Image 1 (cartoon, one colour):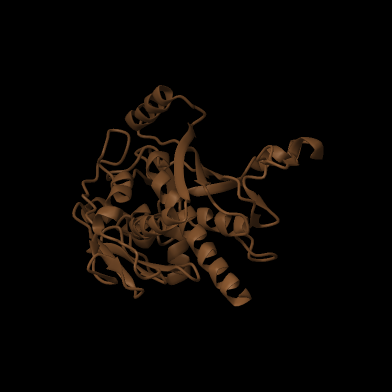
Image 2: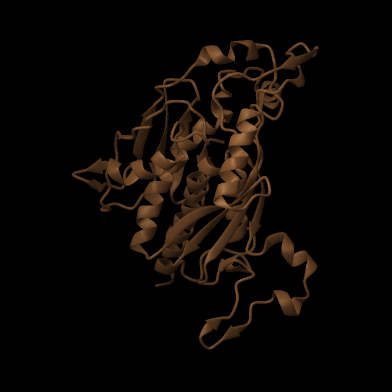
Amino acid sequence: MNTFGTNFRITTFGESHGAAVGVVVDGCPPGMALGENDIQPLLDRRRPGTSSLVSPREEHDRIGILSGVFEGKTTGTPIAMMVKNEGAHPHDYEELRTLFRPGHADFTYQQKYGIRDYRGGGRSSGRETVGRVAAGAIAMKYLATKGIAVSGRIVSVHGRTGAGEIEAEILAVKNAGDSVGGTAEIVATGCPAGLGDPVFGKLDAAIAGAMMGIGAVKGVEIGDGFAVAGRFGSENNDPISKNGFLSNHAGGILGGISSGQDIVVRIAVKPTSSIAKPQRTVDIHGNDAEITVKGRHDPCIVPRIIPVAEAMLALVLIDAMLEQEKYRSKGE
């Protein structure tokens, strides 16, 4: 599946080392002011080559809007956006033509399709998220008109929590030819109560699915998440007063429906699979082999995954907002 969403639908396209990557957005309400300057800042936060902590791949990731906007406003028709791949080095991956990289989707893509783009993983590469982020920027602009803001932060990297410790740890593993994972938190503020649908259309289920759809994410928590397994109900319930909720252990969602509190999501991000250390693998014929992955890779994906996760949360929320507007209009 390359399409996400129901009311606000996005379809991403392109490969890591192909000509371009991008997205087509369908279902954006008409009449909203929109330009490339609304989208570029989020892409700039996601792009590589911005510091010594991330991949040195040189990509400017300049967004181009191809359709769906006229005289600075959305028309309600599909919005197509594209970013050209400028810094692709497909020759770095030539030896991967016959080898599977541990931790990557090389093996599973080969098993499913009988063919794979070995140049950086093709569609399984994190570069696919350019389209998600571009679409998410549009969603965030719409949500802002409703008083909703989405933001994210790094919680930890390899157990480190301070900014200085995190930076030092990433640089250390980079120099060692290894990688590390970490956790991030994404929060939506200003979200109204009532978004989401029981029983199989729960808002937290949609959020969890969206986050797990990011390639490097291996775990999702809503609210206090796994910590609730060690509590009494008297500790974990969020008391309610005439002035509102007194705590937010539930992360802003009750029964799959938003409560009006902050929606709090945390994700577990795996270490980057592409590392310079020798690893055991097999070739396409099933023979044992050893691999050392060349190329330009992030020693830690967490810093660059923040805008991707923000985008995915925004995409879930705009979809739920548009669904709620349909529901209310039918009620009237």
